[in-house]
Length: 359
Image 1 (cartoon, rainbow, N blue to C red):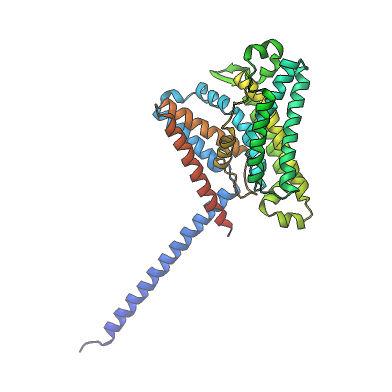
Image 2: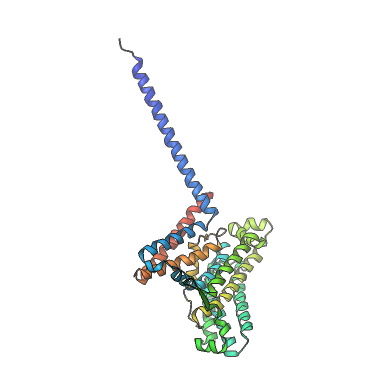
């Protein structure tokens, strides 16, 4: 006699196993989502981690492709090459942290260098005073940007696009489209070239400008992370309305950010004179885009509120590593630009992915 309950029991066992399999799959999916969420959260909390890893992998990769790349000599040369871009990237980071952007940083740098050079070399003003005046004018140009953004309530992109054209016109008018030669600077104001000098250690050639970049980045990192002003800058980038309701003077902080950015560009003008050994009104015409590239690759969000000073320096180094590594590998210049563009797109896409981590 056949047991009629056997088929039913078999079906029940199958359904139970199927249910267990579904539960296992769902549990695996939840664990997978939890792992991804944890990774996104960790990367969001430590924006410097990504550019640090990218820089390390880039150095290792290019050292394999081009053995000449691996060494203190090549790496110290890259630091020299990106010193000016690194300083301008620090100024750009402050602005982008407030969800703004400054397209005029390069023009501010060039005008400040022209003022320093003309006062010290042509007019005969003491070098120290000429440098201070050049830096002050950098701050004043930043003040113009800040007032238009904070008081007139104009979009930062439009404001700095306009002042970029204004400052470019002013630098050509002020300089009469003439450069100041290296021989004249060495004869009249050699102190302007000081940051281009340096020393050798264990095969590495370090410039005072590169050391200044590292020290300045460390100071700015401390200010942004351990002072009330730095916390206010981050808060405004996160949510200006909430920052205002919490008692932060949003307009004052915004103006101060653009002023500090201008002062940094003014100081970078002195670095730039030492780096290239001369003063030209058409120099550093691409430093605006280079600084934005470094900041974005360094993990600072274009939407404001999240970023890293150290990451911006690492971003500048990454661009320098890619350009130098590809050059040593025999890759044409246009592919170097192609690689930089890809890095920017990937960095922005990653930023969008990380922003969704908190939603």
